[in-house]
Amino acid sequence: MTISKPMAAPLSAPADNSTFSAADGREAGAPPAVPCGPDEAIARVTAVDRDQYLIRVGAGEIPARLTGRAAYSSASAVDLPCVGDWLRVRMHDGGAHASILAVLPRRSFLRRKRPGSAVEFQMIAANIDLAFIVQSCHFDFNVRRLERYLVLTCEGQIEPVVVLTKTDLIAAAELEQLVAQIRQAGIVARIVALSNVSGEGIAAIRELIQPGQTCCLLGSSGVGKTTLVNHLLGDEGLATGAVSQSGEGRHTTTRRQLIPLPGGACLIDMPGMRELGMLYVSEGIADSFADIRALAGDCRFADCSHEREPGCAIQRAIAEGEVDAEHFRNYQKLLRESAFHEMSLHEKRDKDRAFGKLVRAAGKARGRRHEER
Image (cartoon, rainbow, N blue to C red):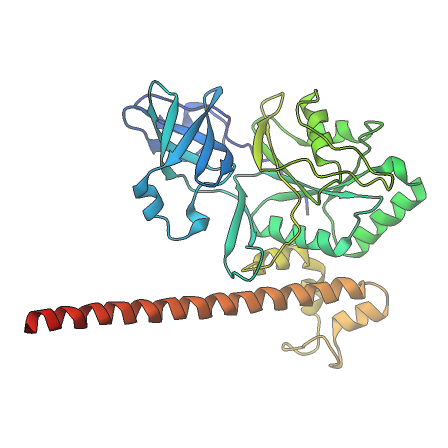
């Protein structure tokens, strides 16, 4: 998997009766051409707090609220604005606040199954070019969780970069072993080793972030994401927690927020996510487990279950040490998990449709009774 560097839209917006278009000389990642009426503008969501939004228009941030029409036209919560979304807004009181009229089409997204028993999507962020998946070498390293992050980013058309932090707490040989584990799992994404103490790796991160791009930081709490943001900002603008004796940091980020970086890029910082549920991620699984998919094509039988069939290329590769058995088991686990949640979602939608038909039928019957009277 190679790293591409598409250009994202800059944090600027016309406030006149104009059309925002990439053809105007802006970067290629600008929002699609959208007609703007009087007192309308193109803005970007920088933070969300329930039904309250903070948006960036031009060089400043103002509060915004969703109009009733925009809210009712949303088919589900996934269609509501999230951090990173581009919006068409109407300005009020001389630009002091705004109403959100529409969410513009997303060119990439980060979403997961909503935590808990509910079988539905939760939108995390949108319009991201590069995702830095951060794991600590000291206490947080987990290849199976890394694979989950990779599935989510690949499904959302986001380029992943693996960042291994706190390298100052382990020996060089241990770091090599961790990198080897990642490669043995078939992960070919770029890896950056980082020490927030010595600053090693910071320059490599900066080189990856191009002007106009939008990046995000993913990972558990306490792995050094906020400290990395402060390095990229060049100051101590965000609060960080003290490190425990075990080397584990303490959670400090409390909400997702889009932060402008020096040089014209943007970065979305977000709290650690404990649950990374799979839902409709077949494309992401196919991309993240490309090695498994390629081997499956060499099996003797087209319907091979990759368990005990003769001529199974995957089982042969595992036996010969070419494929990590845990890597293959996680592939099967993610497929089953996604399929189970998809089935549950279809059943829920069928029940909702059946209930809707029942309500409409009851309404018609009630109307007929009134007419008979």
